[in-house]
Length: 480
Image (cartoon, rainbow, N blue to C red):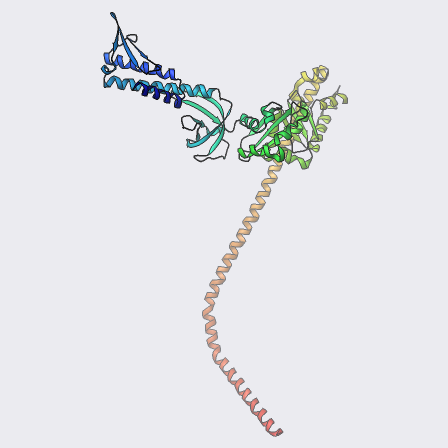
């Protein structure tokens, strides 16, 4: 029996991944609880237990004033045995939770592969081990939009947190986290795993598109080509894992202008104007590249802004030139303003009359070295001119809305007129049908009245035809 106990302890320790010494300590504590239950003792120091790890022999001691007395196990009875059982189960569960926590707390931030079990309240439950002992959950917010799994599907996830809630261990999984992409690249691209290629920045909209900026620590290794792989083999595996999510790999550059141009690919950028004071980058692209640079619903420029850390405005050359003309026309007449000042303002990325008011007088004085009085006049003129431009824009917007409303009203009127004509035509057809129905008896009467006349005409025709036949026969006889 003792050897059987040792084998059971070894089996539990292996299956539950609990240290054998911990299980033995739990058994000893359970036997002490059973003894206290049997003797109705409240003293936690009155009893002690010792179990031999080799033989499995269990000895219980009761400490009295006269000394320690061994308590036979048979003496404890059924109720203390049930108490020992409950204590052992509770301690085993606590040890199991502790073992799971210690195992997975070190895996936070890593990829794991599990089996989809079920959905609970929108969260996906994933079994992380073969025995189903460890389960992780993926909240709806951490799932890729539109992605659905069935029970038994294999899924790769990213562990973002491991929590000990007391009653259970919660392992929070994610597939929408941006580091999930980073770990996938480390798994598929050995150069990333070995830090030959570094992922400097990343921006992602899960399920739709991801942009990453990479660089190489080895001049002989092309970072973009290594991530793409031969004929796109490496990037294809990642895209398939993400369910078709698009991934743009761009080359990292210390120059913000070059990086922004790379981040907006596949659009071709003509020029980049940076305003460090406003943290804004103005991008000039041709008309045929405008929609490509903005992307569907602004996705391309939005991801590029997150990747580079700049607020990006995209303008056509005409819009850019128009903003500069308004700025020059407003500030050139100001007393003390020279063309050199305006050129330096444009070089700093101040390309709009609204930018002058936003950057303030201190920037004009310190960075552009403009005298205080001139800077004050520039700011005042910019404020007045910006109000005029705003009013003009609002007026143009109202005029456009009014024109659109008129066009919609005209279209509605045409549609209503067409509908009325169709209704009148339908009514006329109904009336004409009724008139025809009323006219049918009159027509019948007319036909009845005309019937004798028709018969007389037919008889006359028959007589004429008979006379013609007789004359023809007589003529034939005379010729013979």
